[in-house]
Image (cartoon, rainbow, N blue to C red; front, side, top):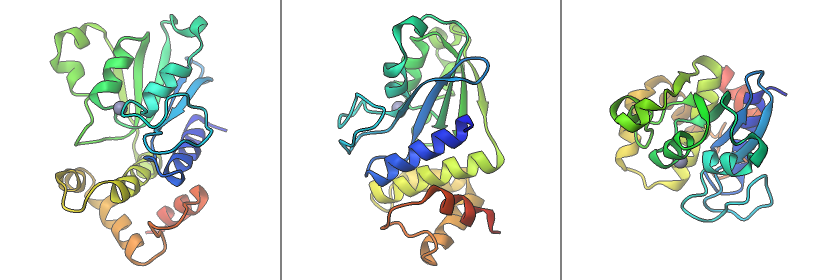
Length: 200
Ligand SMILES: [Zn+2]
């Protein structure tokens, strides 16, 4: 299974468990996964995580926590995350030896990649970033958007910012929610999600 397939499946697990559908992995240069984590803010399910049910139970924090000590000092590690890291997670990544972040979908509200260029301490770390596009971006965004729809009150400013950043994706997903092809009140099947997103 590829990194993104694993991450999407882990994010779906988080979504179905009642947390946010966000996951992260730390890989070596060859793309071998060394550690994984998912958002576990709101569920106590047995998963790959140790950090659960607290405000720091974010995907990237859990992935970093799951990285074995022997690999903590590697210089060449890469973080993959389905959603752009928040300031806490970006800070935690900067304190590790990860020097490349690959982002599935942008988060115009809490995402903090811009700090890498604005904060002198973070700039010195020399962390490079890549934002995915196309199918991976759309699936990662869908999982994030569906989570927010359940988690955040309607009318919150996050929805305006997300709509502005991803107008086509939000329009398509809103239609799918309305048509009940992608009901927000039922467990999500990752394959079904990818299938409905393929329709235009
Ligand atoms: Zn975070």
